[in-house]
Length: 304
Image (cartoon, rainbow, N blue to C red):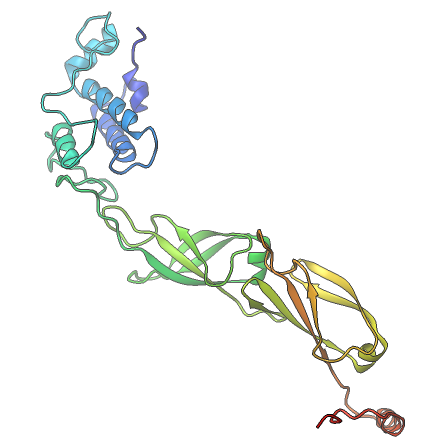
């Protein structure tokens, strides 16, 4: 049978001190305990690290393992591990599993419990308490949603003094009101809660947003509307050329398919034409308007 390498199991070198071995074991126990871990192999890994720690924490067993490759001095044994009397039930990890395991493993520690960075484990045999989730509104540009982006944001966490600088990935196509989850960045507890960043879009100088659709009011001149022309229309993805038919009325809405926010069902961009009338602020323009009034039969209030 192949011999087990307990040093490799714990991820320490053969010269590691007792304190280093204990520290590494605690880190792995917090990671793989089935009451906490979501990994599919957590139960098997937890058994392995407990077996390794039980050998390496004991001076005599460790010395035998270093010399013979087994804890009892028998070189023909593959590991020599015998679970401690009254050891934890590794099969079901039911009620009391935390208390049993950590009473056995840390019975010689000063407090008799694991107090890691987030107080993940307790001696009461209960699942660790998760801190409160928190939601903070952040402002991003429409371009960040259209292209996707990575941003460093100064975020004020409710209840904390000052601000926290966070590196945030803005998902491509995220809509206003949707939330970005940052695991473990919420309020402290035995396990930290999550922080949710609710997206709000900054005001854009050209575009307004409606769900995943983009709206643009595009000014045109009276002669462009009357005679027709080729328009250069700005979009979040760049400029698009569009032909405008003659005799186009103000308020007409043009649709640019899939030019809104991206996604499985991408939004559209709607262009609303707004005819802008130049001022009659020169003699030539005044004369031109008088001539149009004389020859045109147009009455904008004919239906009244």
